[in-house]
Length: 408
Ligand SMILES: Nc1ncnc2c1ncn2[C@@H]1O[C@H](COP(=O)(O)OP(=O)(O)OP(=O)(O)O)[C@@H](O)[C@H]1O
Ligand SMILES: [Mg+2]
Image (tube, rainbow, N blue to C red; front, side):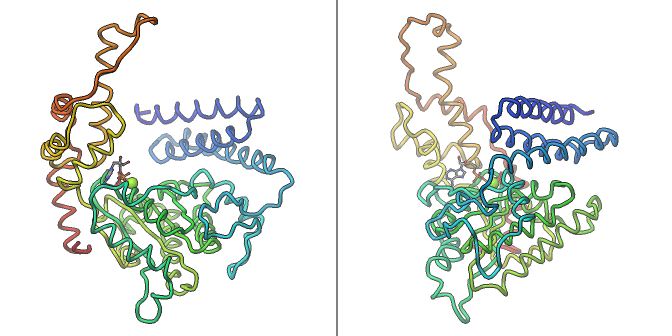
């Protein structure tokens, strides 16, 4: 086992152990989460491991965990009718009744069980992120407003030739706000938000990924207007026939393609798919063409970088003024929002670390006063924390954007 494999494996074992303990203690909901987590990690492990015996064992264990989680779930839900739980409907516009009826019909008991099973994979809570929480990216926000928010809020404007898009792809370097933008769009358009990591969808839930995808779309249709966010879409939509894919993976892709294709025809109730990727060039052409609008989410510009420094240090005591934040913006060229966020975390910890190193925390009676952070802390940290996006990959994004994307 490589050290990565063995870490994954022991992590799964640890989760499973905790699941069993919680299960015995009668803390079923927590146990369910832990069983699911353990199964998910084992499934990840199976992807990397080359040891067939171990894979078999892990497959068996993950099945056991999923089954146990299923049993606990039905136990927790008791005698309640097996319908979509109303808490999976975050928005004010989505139906709040327990039994879901619409043109698509209700979920069958089996489908409901699948929904319960995948509830750890799919997030439906309202994200509560607003456009204003995101620095810069004005063009992206505008594109999403036009493509998502307006058609959802004012469907009457989008009839006849003025058709709304049904598939939108956000692409760009890691850590630049794709997930944030998707969340803000969901909050602002008041649709039911479904968010699923494609890697999780692919994980071989007892080989039922295709079913899972079809149920996810069905549920999203039932809850329409819905926004279905498929993060890391490259992991499920890599170019077909590109070597390592299994027949199962191919089937999953085909299923996803046909679901996205089907969206255009059933446009009475809005269901919109928003994909995100930082490897757009890996995406299958057929899939790519389903996303009619492709929005480039670039590295933050100077003003956005300054603003991200401010957002990430809000509420922390500091000796910095507006000019200092501009200087920070200038000094952090090439950094992504996540790089800046990491640098800020580092800086915020600095005063505490200094105090710890000088032994100040050893005397429990001593009153502790943490010093404010200052520009110098940032300068030191920026020298250490380097941007993650290389020049080369940046160029690759720009070229791809030029060829396929919106020129925003
Ligand atoms: N424009 C921004 N405004 C404010 N914060 C930002 C911005 N961009 C990035 N961040 C910070 O970086 C973090 C990561 O952003 P996000 O998760 O949206 O990146 P992403 O593009 O989805 O990355 P990945 O491709 O790795 O999934 C955010 O949680 C936030 O702290
Ligand atoms: Mg993301």
